[in-house]
Image 1 (tube, rainbow, N blue to C red):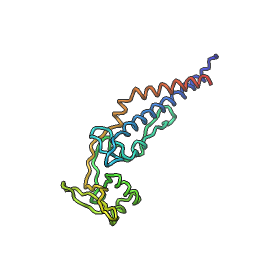
Image 2: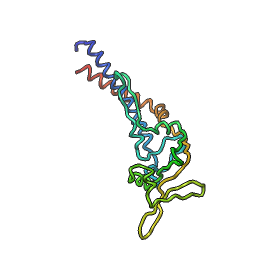
Image 3: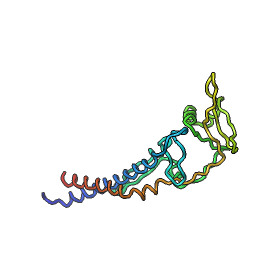
Image 4: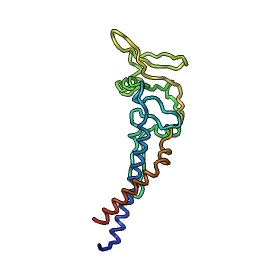
Length: 201
């Protein structure tokens, strides 16, 4: 085989780009795996909240789907991004304040369905004539809806809070630290494959 330095240099560059992107995609996959855990329960999807200090349990899967990997600038680096507004809030924790008097959260499947049925608008959902608010023993406000015709029953939809303090549930940094070997493996495999293909083409 005749040596071609320019061809080899081009193949190295291509292999580096593919390796970087493969490592970034591996990281995204590992983050998504960490977020797709959580048992089912009466509040699922969403199940029960994860313990503070552990990755958030899966609810709708939107947080996991929000992560993606991209080639950056000239392709010799790759980046991972998220479109979720609350991705960092879960990672580091924080305080959520309402724009009005209360924050209203759907806490059951029925609550999520009810909110979707009203276009995702809490104001519209709360305007449902079958909805009513009740205080619990701790003084919190719960939102129920009366359902049924012959046998009327109340279904829990939402919880109302004046402030919500979110404890950290890190998953971004811990995944990066714990899955370095998997990312390196993805990089190596992609680099070797594309280097060989570039040299032999």
